Length: 255
Length: 269
Ligand SMILES: Nc1ncnc2c1ncn2[C@@H]1O[C@H](COP(=O)(O)OP(=O)(O)OP(=O)(O)O)[C@@H](O)[C@H]1O
Ligand SMILES: [Mg+2]
Image 1 (cartoon, helix red, strand yellow):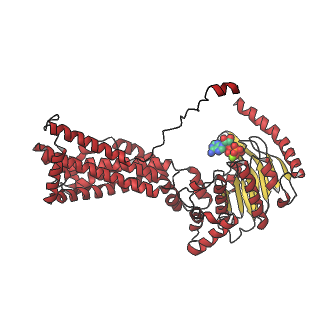
Image 2 (cartoon, chains in turn orange, green):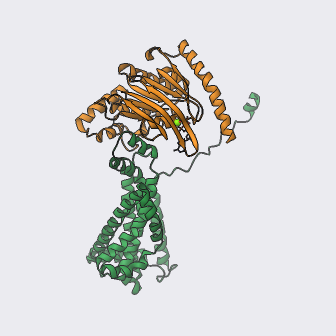
Image 3 (tube, protein in one colour):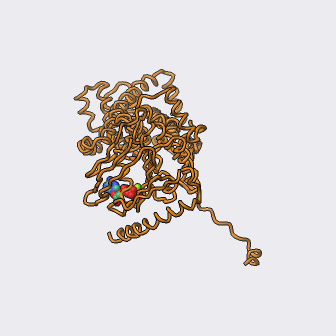
């Protein structure tokens, strides 16, 4: 299933946030969205996930939703959004219960996603016992449990320190290489964007428009740390971003 | 620099990080009670406190054991407890439901919040004669008074607690396609539980106050009736037995809620 964004425009009151965004998200590919703060990245992601409606324009699903997908559009949030009163296993079971999956069947799925995210030993731990990186892994496991057609990740690693982030990027690459998934990945961090994105959507400052689409052809698992080609792409992205970010900064002062 | 260090012993950085972190010290509370009672006992024994001012704690204890042995204790306690329990269960369950509705639906909020704000400050005791006319002199009017008295603080605590539930968790629930009812039951309610339980402490204290008021007005048996009778005879020992029983009920209720808090809210950081 592909996702098509067609002519998306959005305003909050008199503030124009997103302007004329059209783009295709191909099945099995990771699209990264980068752009200056406040340019509407999170808003765009909420449109794709159906949590909000754009003022004009549409988000279209092309092709049938895979039958085994319980929740085609699945979010991974920056602040993890785990229920603190449920254990790791309970948090995953939460999203299965409403689909009538309980008991042994649920346990099978839970054990599977926990082992895929290296969390098998933490099934009965409460979120307060986990580090930030582990919490985000639980959130990723929870997202995997519903077999999403598209994963929507809103700065999933921003709340983590850089070492943990590095580890989780590897984990995501690993997960994708074993079983490709479609994802839209919003980030501030260009390093993350070049490591994970098959294509990178650069948005302008508010109102967010597509400034440029950068595609990177290197396979994900060959994008190791310190790859020269990636470094070049990252610099290139930063050149585009810097001017936007600068202008966005000045704009805020003028308000 | 290094010479200087050798001469003067370097000062240890002053610790200033203590406090502001409540820790459980159970025995302190008990010690306060014991010390206070001992002081009163000593004062009344020596005559420093006249026996018109306060009864001897030891006499109060004797009166209590007499009450217990005569079997009258249960005759007073059981009706009181059942009034308390039935009345507050009605009030609290209605209060929690209405509070959650206010928290969830903006029309309910717009309609009921002013009404609750208007009802809250009314001294419910003042309405007792009205309740007697509406519901009769028997048990029903007592249940109604206690229910009404616990209802308003429970509503206020509950909708405040619902308002404070982390919105990102609700968003998360929606993003996974959870049904409305599941979100309320599995996210909103557990998220609000801490606030609801702390509201219950207040509601239950109010319930005990109203229980006594209701029993003073028209009841043959009950702690309130017992206290009223002792008061009109100026029988300080019995008066204090009644008061102590009420305090103990309050303490037990609060301990009960504390137990639930520790059980249900052990996920809190
Ligand atoms: N519910 C809302 N009501 C009004 N304005 C909003 C709302 N949500 C977002 N905005 C505004 O829309 C703009 C875009 O917000 P959005 O959160 O999508 O930006 P972002 O690109 O994700 O920013 P960041 O990089 O800081 O996460 C911001 O200026 C924000 O203030
Ligand atoms: Mg954002």
